[in-house]
Each structure stands twice: as structure tokens, then as C-alpha cells.
Image (cartoon, rainbow over all chains, first blue to last red; front, side):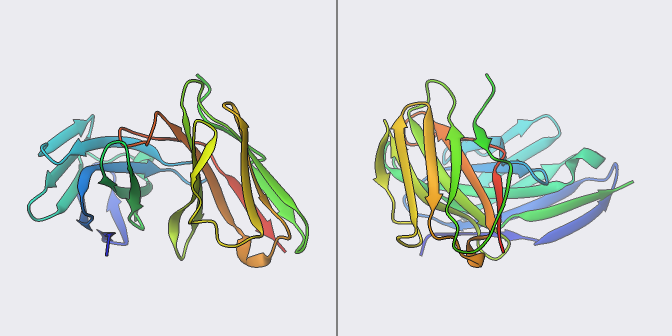
Length: 114
Length: 114
């Protein structure tokens, strides 16, 4: 069964601290994996997209890693800011680049406290 | 570019009424997707169009839901009659082709059926 599992479900950290969010996927055939940030009341916004051949990709303070062998990905946030409070959604693309679909995780709700 | 534009942002309606959600995709994108997001189920794909033609509507929950895309710059999602269990946030997203290389989501319409 194609699915994406994220952990933890929620996380609270203090401003300035680092954190790592986890994602496990069982999507086949696997094409790429992306992380989205969703602020309250807004639509998801793409942070990173990685193909199966990429191990890491950064976007400012966000660094995503991908291990296609173990089907795991992580999103590391460095020096967290209050504005990082949001839901982070891991999404796997299953299929070819022309025919496939997205499989969404349920998200990790991150809260950054001052 | 104004991004994907959805309207209304919020809709409160009584059970049994017809509800119409609207979406304007990013100019030049040729694929459009309708998603529903709830706390219990996360993001679910309802239907997607490619070049204004519905490609996959297997996610549409039942006959009360219908979607149209009369031209490349406009799509509607209609619920008739609406029920309280339809309460959710409905997102529209657009992309080039299948979306394997990335999506852009709108800000969503929060629907409440009382």
C-alpha cells in the first residue's frame, strides 16, 4: 500500500533551537519526495523537492535528506524562528514524471516558543 | 504572478444548500487539482484536470460533488446538496503537466456546513 508516515505528530521547541522531522514512505514506483510548509489558514508551500538520486537539498535554514534505500527522509530546521511555527508535510510522488500522483503524509505540527 | 487564486476564502452554508468554490490557476499551468483537507484525513486529492479535461476523478466522494474547468483560467467545485460532513478546507493547486516537478497551492476555501 502506498503511504507516507510522519513523526512526530507534533513538536514544541524553543526559538533558536534546531529540530528534525521524520518521514517514511512506501511509495512505488518512487520518483521524488518533497517537503511542504503550511502556515495556519494558508495553502502548502514547497520547501524542497528531491529525486531518488539526491541525498540532500537545502533551502535556507531548511535541509532535507533522502535515503531511497531505506525509504526515509528528514527535514532539519536550524536556528528555529517563531515564523517556523507551521505544519510540515512530507509528500512522495509515485509514478513516472508524466503519469503518477502525490501521496501526502499527515504532517508534523511544529510550534516554536519564544 | 498572483499565484493560484481561490474564492471565497470562507463559506458558511446550511445543510442542503448548493456550494460553489472557484479557482483561477497560474497562467500557463496546464494542470489543475482540487484537494480537500481535514484533521482526520489530511490532504486528499478529489479530481485533477489536464488541459481542461478531467483526468482522474476517483477521489470525488460521491455524486453530490462535481467539478468543471470550462477554460484554462477557471475551475469550479460544486457540492449539491451540501452536508455537515463536507466541512473542510478545499484547496486548488496548479502545475505544468502532471505536477511531478512541483505544485502551487491556493490559500484554500474553508467550508462550514451547519
